[in-house]
Amino acid sequence: MLDFGIYLLYRAGTAIASALPVRVLFAIGNLMGLGAWLLLPKYRRLARRNLEIAFAKEKSPRELRRIARRHFQSLGANLICGVKMGSMPPEKLAQRAQKNDKETDEVRLRIAKARDIPCFISLEEQMACGIGVCLGCAIPARSRPFRYVCSNGPVFDAADVLDVAADAKIAAKAEAKAP
Image 1 (cartoon, one colour):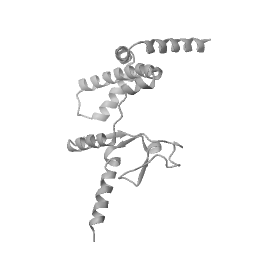
Image 2 (cartoon, one colour):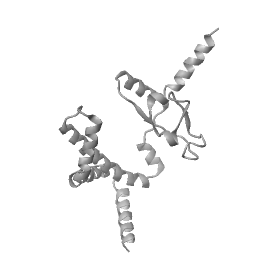
Image 3 (cartoon, rainbow, N blue to C red):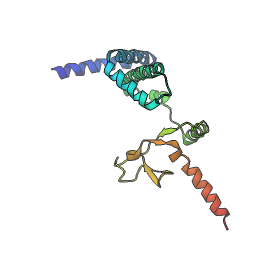
Image 4 (spheres, helix red, strand yellow):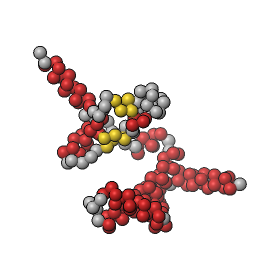
């Protein structure tokens, strides 16, 4: 009986989320994330400790608290908006999603390199096996001949996977000019 009650609550929440605009849900999610940050001190300390490890002495304790609080808020907002996204028709969802082409990613990589900022990219490929055996998701890389989106990714160092095509073109031109 408890399972059925939980199911009814979930369905009611989904129906409410489907009826509200995304901006309202985002604000509600932000408030829920803030509430989680306030009510869950153990996780708040864990997030702050992880940020201390990640940023070492680059950020002040005040900045670390702000980053952790905003992270909790973003998690709440993304969770609530994700419920709505699951019930949206594909046409409306496409209006809210952004997919970059390779040229845009390469421009961002060049900007990051110029500013000496690490740049990572999330890739999407058709996957058959999901463990790197079928080689259906293989992409060329600098660090080795191929990387596999399913087992090595989907997040990669952009410099490892984006510059490969340009390097191949340069090498082909050099070979064509060689006697």
